[in-house]
Structures are given as C-alpha cells and as structure tokens.
Length: 150
Image (cartoon, rainbow, N blue to C red; front, side, top):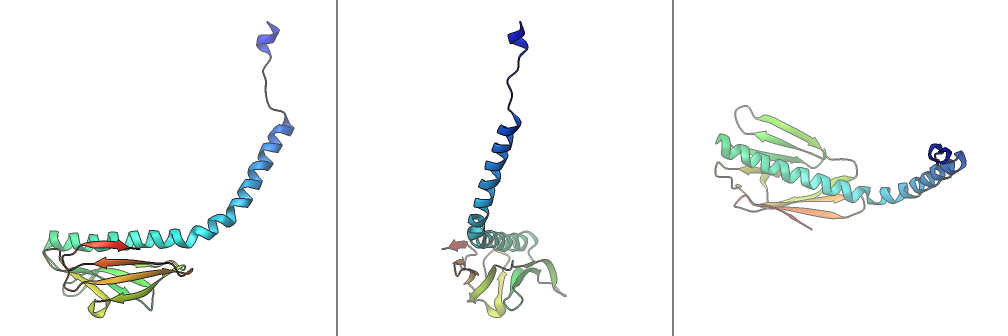
C-alpha cells in the first residue's frame, strides 16, 4: 500500500539541468535565425506584393474601375490605388529595412494598371532585393497573370 502512495518526481537539480540545457540551445540558435531573417523578409514582402497586385486586379474586374499599384523606389513603398477623380489610395505599404526595390521595368511611371478585363496596360517586372543581395522578381504579363520568378 505504501508503494502505491509513493510518487516519483524530478529533483530540483534535474529541473535546473534541463532549464540550463534549454537556455544553451536557445542562445546557440539566435545567430542562426538572424542569418535567415533577410531571406524570410524578402519572401514575405514578395508574397504581400503579389497579393496586393492580385487584389488591385480583382477590384478592377469587380468594380469595372481602373485600379493599380504605384511603386515609389526612393521611398521604398508602394500603394494600391483606385483611379477615379480624385485618385483614391486604398492601401500603402512600406518595405522593411532589409528589403528594397532593385529595379522596376516595363511600367510607365512605375505603375501597374489593370483594365476592366483584368489585363494590364503594360507588362513588366518588379525586382526586390534583400540586404544580402538575394533577389526575387515578380513578372506581370499582358494578360494580367502574375508570377514569382527566382
């Protein structure tokens, strides 16, 4: 009967050893995460930009009013715009410090404009760069198809 009442548990020393090992593993892994941070931010910004381009395209088709995305290379930001009089800025997004625009090609005034059919007025590419010189290119085709190139 006494054996049933006896519980096995960890001693204070065992718990302290476990906490110490976990702390050491965390300290070792922090520099590793910092190495991957720029690549993760570049990937996230690319996905967000593609999503916002598709959002502008969807609004254009749905509302039958031109929408687009305007890039500001010097300010490192972009805006989703409804082209009515006066222009309406629907969304504005700044790029994080580790990501920047490398080049924007093919678009007049650095703007992607969608027509009511979902196609673009001009096709082109947007290239984003991380602070570690890794790049990702977004290709916008005449049909309005948006694709991420490596």
